Image 1 (cartoon, one colour):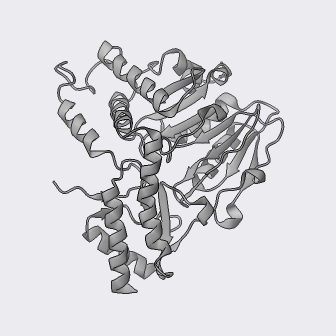
Image 2 (cartoon, rainbow, N blue to C red; image 1 turned 30 degrees about the vertical axis):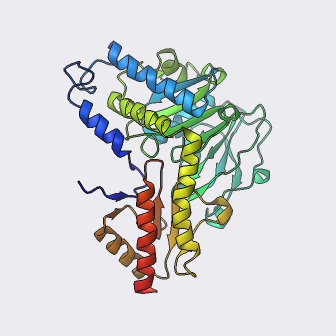
Length: 361
C-alpha cells in the first residue's frame, strides 16, 4: 500500500499504527460482536473508552485534578461562542489577542455575546508574527483573556504565554495541543478540535478549571453549558463515540512514543528539515512567518511567482505529496507537520524542495 505524504492542515494525518489498530477492531470491538459505532454510549464498554481517553489526556498533558476534561461536539468553532456564553460577564469585557483568521473568528462570535476588547494585535504585520507578552494589555476587569496558540494559516505560534494572574487565560490549541509540554495550570480553559493533532474530526476537547465550570449561567441552553457536560462526564447526550475511541488510540500512540516531551523533540527534528530547506535556498524559498514566531505545526513559504508555486503544487502532487497548497485566503505554500506526520515524509519533502530548486532555480 502506497501512503501519501500527507501535509494536510486538517483533517490531518493520523498515525498509521492507529489506523491499522482501528481497522482490526472496526467490525468487532473487544469481542462485543459489534463496532464501537454500534454500541450504546451507556454500555460499560464505551464508558471504559470514554474514561480511558480522559485519563490518558490527563496523564500525558499534566492536567491537574481541579480541571475537567470534556469531549464535546461542534468543533472549535462552537467553542468560539460557547466560551463567552459561559464566561463573559456583564460589565467585564472579554479580552482577545488578534493573531490571524482563527482568532478573528473567535472575536466575532464573542461580540455577539457581550463586550470585547482587543488586548493585542499583529494585523499590522499581516499576522506574520505573534505579539510579545509585553504587548498584551489586559483590562483589570476582564472576564478572561483569549489567545490562539498556533495560527495554521500564517504559520505562527506562541512560544511564551502571558501570566494573567486572577484573570482566566483561555487558549484555542486546536492545531498544537500535545505537540509540546504546557503548564496547564496557567490556563483557565484550553480547547481543541481533534482533527489536527488528536485524531479524526467530530470531537472537541475542552479542559476547564472546576471554578469556571460552576460559572455556567442557567439562562443558556443545557447543551451549551460546561456544567452540563462536566456533571455527566461528557455523556449527557450521545457522544461522537468513534472519534473519542480514535482519540484514545492516538493518546496511547503518543504515550508509546515517550510522551509529549518526546513529541516536541520529534516535531523540532521534522520541521528543521523543511525550515533548513527554506533558509538555505538562497532566497528561492521565502518563509512567511517571522523567525521568532515560526510554528512547529504549520510551515508557510512562498516562491518567486504564483506560477512557480502552482508548478510546485502540481509536481509535488505527482510525487505523492498532499496538502502543500497554501490557504485560499493568503495563497503560497504550506506544510502542516502535526504529531502524526512521519519524519520520513519531511525528509521526502526537503529532498523534493531541493530537486525542484535545481530544476527551476
